[in-house]
Amino acid sequence: MKLSPPTDRAIRRLLLTDAVGKIHGESRGTYGYRRVAATLRIESGLIVNHKLVASIMQELQLYGLPKRRTARRNLIAVRTTSDLVKRDFTVTGPNQLWVTDITEHPTREARVFCCVVLDAYSRKAVGWSIDRIADAALVNSALKMAAATRSTTRETIIHADHGAQFTSWAFTSNVRNYGLRLSLGTVGDCYDNAMIESFWGRMQTELLNRKTWTTVVELSMEMADYIENFHNTRRRHSSLAMLTPTEYETTNQSQLQLS
Image (tube, rainbow, N blue to C red; front, side, top):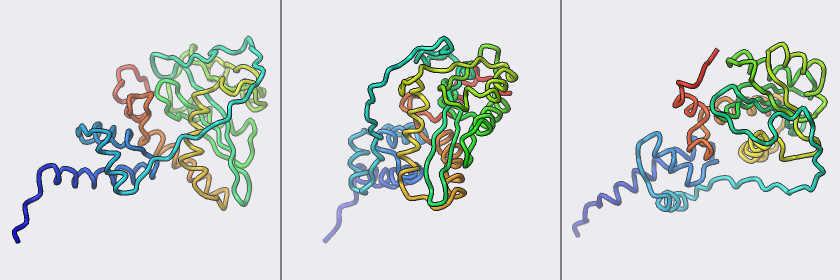
C-alpha cells in the first residue's frame, strides 16, 4: 500500500512542535501559549495562531505556570508627604524611576533575603543583593549596583516602603550621595509598590515555590540566575509588548543612556 506524502500543514505542525518544545524548555517550563507564540513571532518571525500553539502544547503535555493568587487585604493606608510616586509608575524613559523592595524565602538551613532595584521603564533589575540578613547593608548593596551600572540625574526617583532598612540613616545617606530623590510609599498599603510586588509574585511562582530548598548557597545562586539570566534577558513581559527587559531597552536605544 502506497503511503501519501505528508501535507504542508502536517510538516509545518511537526516543525512547530519542535520549536514550541524548545521555547517552553528555555522558559524553564514557565511559559503558557501566549508567551510561546510571542517568542515564535519575535525570535523566528513566525506568526502562529494562539489556538494552534495551545493545541501543540496540550499534545506535548506542556503547561505554563499559573499566576499567583494573592488575597486582598483591607488595610488602612496612611498617606505621607515623602511619597513622590503615588502609585503612578508611568515614565517616558529609563532611569527616571526605580522601585525597590525586599523578599525572603526559607531553606532548610536558614532564610534568604533578596533586595532588588527595578527600573520602572523596562522592568529590568538594575541592582540586586542577596544575604542571610535583611539589614541596611543588603539594600545599600543593591543600590550600589544600580548606581554603578546606570546613568542618573537629579530627578531620578528611587521608591521604597517604610521598612526600617529604607528609612535607615545608612540608606538615606547613600541615596543623597548618589544624587537620587527618595520616595517612601503609603504606610500600610500592600499595593503601593505594585510593580515590584508583581516581580516578587512571578519569582515566587516561577522559582521559589517549585521545590524545597536545602541550603542558603543553593537558593542564593538560583535567585541570582533567575534575575540576570531569566528575568532580564529571557522572560517576556506583556506590559513590554512581549519583549524582555533587555530587548525593550535595546529597541529603544535612542532613549537609553548607559553609564
